[in-house]
Image (cartoon, helix red, strand yellow):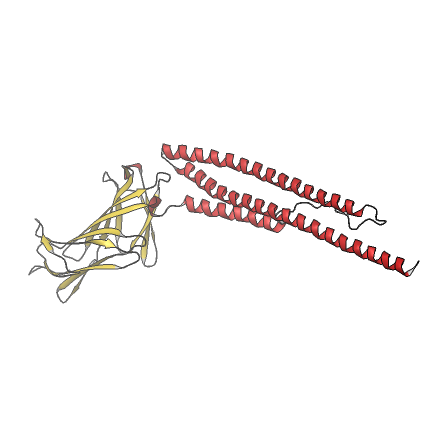
Length: 344
């Protein structure tokens, strides 16, 4: 073999190698491009699955707890729509994957035909051949993470929708009246009206009082509601069970009656009574009315408000306003009993 023949042979081999590397690069680019599209399609499907889990669990919880016919019908329709759209999303995902697979195979077929055309007449075919390459979607780890996300979201939504803040998330309106007695004891009556969501009818609520206080809760008809009291170190925990009589006009209506034997304090012949209010949440109006013992003279109030008189010779002090989130409000009334009143 002459020197020119050897040079020509080496040139042809080098050309075949370069062409083979180019074909391999084109095959990898085509496969990776369609695999990227497939991963995007699968992630869209999983994201929609998360949304369906959130809405589906919430709809089932609302359906199971609702007492309103419109809410029941709405939840049932929502569940059916979610089920149907989930089936359609599965169909969309299958068609999208099939479309991407077909387009990828057509692209690889075109590359194979081009390679064969270029290799016609060459003694040794160009290597490597264009082989089958599946369209790869999300990895196994990513799919497991999506499934775990669906489970966690379902648990979180189920917990959130199974509970209800403020007895169903409604507004709370209170109106309190405190009646002071000559021995320093007091009776506090608080009328409460709580709105509640139609999907969730509350069955009970919890409140706390100082350990020396006694509590009873009355429904809208004046009958006592069942109360389970559990004493702790410094206070008592009361679990109040709501009966049907407490639900009036779409709201929970009840009256808290708290008897405190040591409500007012005596110091240097002056009685002092302090009450307060504090809550977490948005602004809420309040009204606290304090009635002093008969014949008592009000010396001062904090904050300063007008002192009125009643037909029972009691002084009446009313504190009204709007509370802010997590702010402590204190109200103090100082008074003296009539001359000759026996101290306890």
